[in-house]
Image (cartoon, rainbow, N blue to C red):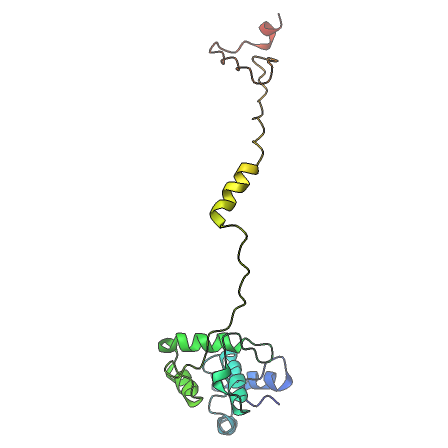
Length: 183
């Protein structure tokens, strides 16, 4: 069904395998079961993480099916997985990969020296009608002037001056009490 032992834990076989890995990590899995699983796949414990192993096996199955590695691009997708991007990351970070990961990739014929990824073709954008430097000056020239600043209401010196007339200077005298203000 999956062709590998990295089945998702959301499937019955994947849940069973996850339980077997859990038991093995606690050294409570029967030795005969460990041997049987190891005979099926040496990496059944998924030493590089489930996601890495699933993507590796997806790519391995694709290539085993007769696909030419030279047709891979960074945009290549298999079963909804961006396998081209994944492969690019593996090859770009080769020194950081564990030796076991490097061995698995080398067995597929995929190394930084044999990198089959061809740059993905990108759609060309239509040329802009105006250079970007003139665009900002055009927008600035068309923009309306900002509205005048709002005047704050002052209770100490109420004034009803006409718009645009100078504002009276604030008083430096101490504020009077409400009783003397209206007396």
